[in-house]
Amino acid sequence: MGSLQTSPNPAAAVPDGIVSTAPGPDEDGPRATLLAVNVGMPQDVPWEGRTVRTGVWKYPVDGPRTARRLNIDGDGQGDTEGHGGEQRAVMVYQLDSYRHWQQHLGRDDLTYGQFGENLTVDGMSDDEVCVGDRYRIGDAEFEVTQPRVTCYRVAMRLGVPELPALLVSHHRPGFYLRVIREGDIRAGDRIVRTRSGPNGLTVAEADALLYLPDRDVDRLRAATRIPALSPGWQGSFRDLVSAAEGGAPTESDEPAWTGFRSLRVADVVTESDLVASIRLVAPDGAPLPAARAGQYLTVRVPDAGDPAPVRSYSLSSVPGEASYRISVKHEPHGAVSGYLTGGLRPGTVVEAAAPRGDFVLGGGTDPVLLVSAGIGVTPVLAMLHACAAHHPDREVWWIHAARGPREHALAEEAHAVLARLPHGHEHVFWSQATDEERHRGHAEPGHVTAEKLAALGIPVRADAYVCGPAAFMTDLEHGLTVIGLEPSRIHTELFGARSAVTPGVVVQTTRPPHQPPGPAGTGPLVTFARAGISTRFRDGVPSVLELADACDVPTRWSCRTGVCHTCTTPLLSGDVTYGPRPLEPPADGQTLICCARPATDIVLDL
Figure 1: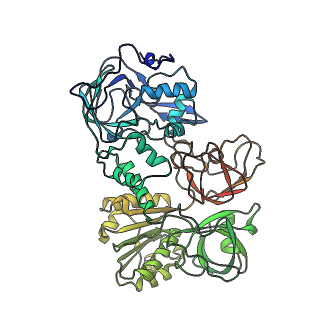
Figure 2: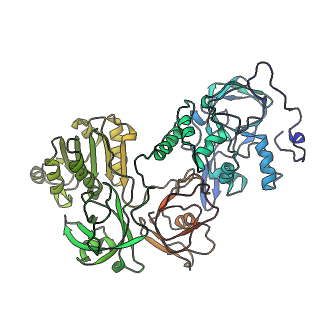
């Protein structure tokens, strides 16, 4: 019993021996029945030139299976970041939804387990079941924790790329269960609701609150008060409440101007052997819009190549000044950084997008920990200036790592600002300096480690801002957590391309970003600013995400159909069209690259 009947009579589509009845005297709500228990272990599946590790291929099994805290016996998940775990131990999907998709997709080949569910049920519709409801099935008891995560892998299983968006727009996501009491379950078991969840938040409503526009803020608040709701969804709803109430600005806030505008180079100052600071002003002398401490500026340099290369650099200037300052490190074989640090002259005109970024100094009175390595000093230096200007009594810890004095840019400026702070602490580490150099520079030997941080006595209630190479930030995040800082208080900023988020894709050898293989495109010019790649869009490429993948530009995505907004990327200039259209449009100045195509030349902060 796994295949679905296709009779036009809905009652006839219910498998033999299963009937819908009114609730019995010991039941709460309509009776439901378990039609199938489906399991499947993770396997490697080829998909669009990649290999995906997934457990979405699940099939019905005969006889009893034990539902345990993390899984049903014989079942597994390929991507435990997005699936599985105690809050998502068991996935449920309904017979009524199978019938719906049979008709909508024109399919007569659907079988139980094909939507990746562990339990195929008759009843328990998404618009009736509520988060926090508890159900007894066989010997086990379960609690509803969240709707299905939007994921491309169910689309892989059915061969319908747009399916993640359809599950949300048709209000038929299915849902996850937590195992409250372990026990055996089998097809044919009755499903009895034993407790109703608080606030009456149905699965369909919860799904719409996260993924669809026009949210009811009161219902969002109610959702955050449901203990059974999984922590990830709790956090997402709290963020949405904060945004609706005018919380802290984020990267999605509207930029100060659209596209690129001309800025004039006022000054170029050598800061170290490899770093130069560039002061930018408006050509007419008018003050530039204020930037927040920690934000970055994306510049396009017409004199440095054709097409004009685009790069992003953190602002190192005092927030609120009438001009902007970026501090640029000359990278080996870096044509653009070489021009900016060695060939740029005062009076040169460059183009810049408005300051952006959510790696910004937060408010409050708790201590601030500013940690950097190398050129990562630039955004935290702006934060240091902001502390001195607006919160001079706040306790500030300044920790910087460099090879030695010749590589330590902006050291005197940082030291002078710290000297004005009554509660400032300065610790500098030089890993390749001589003892005499360290003595003159009041620096400590070696690298910044968790042990050294612990020895400094950093207050665990501090808000930490960390910037530097990827390995440095990974080590520091772990080290700060070990000494007692809450992960939510640790903020990081990575120079260059952001790390990729490609759920389930088996890690393969990575290549630096490059031009896409094959003949050159003839469409609009697409520039990936962080990757330093500009290439023409090619006919037949379905989306900007697919082009980025072809260029090995690190990307972040999950649903690939415009639902989850994981792929949200700042659109620095140009216009895009969508296909399919996202269920909720991105904020101004942003785009969803998974379903976007360039309508004009575009520049992406990617």
